Length: 364
Ligand code: KG4
Ligand code: ZN
Image (cartoon, rainbow, N blue to C red; front, side):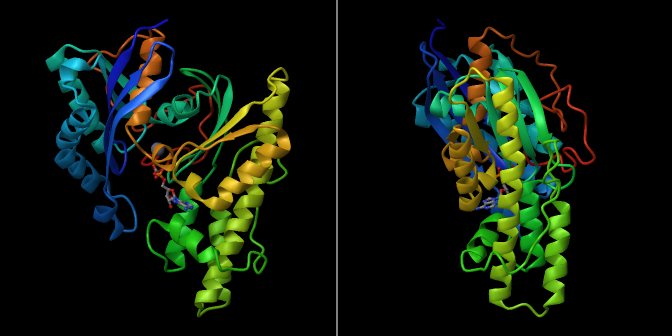
């Protein structure tokens, strides 16, 4: 059994500046002692998306205060942490530099080890902190920059089973919202509008449905939304609601097919596991229809559906701290202070890069 370990986590890969203090107890469970997140939504919303230079500057402005606040909330000083964990990719390079350099500086000044963490690994391992999920399991990461179905076999042992060949799911929500004149970020706006819409009025495409591969494609959906809006212009509020409801319906059907195949593949790979788990992570996990689709799918396939609390599905430093703790508990080596941030850093180094894999490189 590993002794109690405590880590300071730092996350700056996109538009959230975050710091956290997390402790792993000897029994393997985790305790979040502080979780501080500062969203830069206001800085970016006027531009309808994340502006890398603005993001990097905002991280510089906020990070040291946030780290101090996290330590204060945990009621400790830097001397009382065992290590530092900082996101070092994938993401926007300016932001990654700010967080990783800060982590390095703290590690150098205190003599504590530094763990340079893959942001996607943070998302992938969160359910072990929140729900004690055992390996192996499946994670569906659906955010503004990524749409991936990943088999998590162990810490550092991942197989990417599916990814998007064009837009990420969150990106599809954001682009749809933009072309309908709804505010940024698009996901919540589309969900709100869809609540009073008719999901059967428009039949939008469900790309790759029926194909054996587990990849996703959402750019055709966005084009179909534009064509539908143009064909009935000028659009009324009810038209927008109907388009949004039909858009969500198409997504729900697509997820049902794609993820259903993933669950079947998991069963074939691990027939001995009675009740395997599907974890959802990323901002799109907030969407009620996406959640209920996955929930129903899991019931039908006798999978356990795990959706960590919303603030741990979106970007945060708790997951980065936890990934560091998992690595530390296994005795994996800390990183050299020469480690460099990586704007691209696939979880599964064997997976072939698809057309647009990580093309935005910004959000995970
Ligand atoms: O994980 P996240 O907060 O940030 C990163 O991408 O890293 O995800 C943000 C994405 C945006 O594309 C946003 O539109 C989408 O998640 N999103 C939603 C909802 N809330 C956020 N999409 C659909 N429905 C929602 N309720
Ligand atoms: Zn993320």
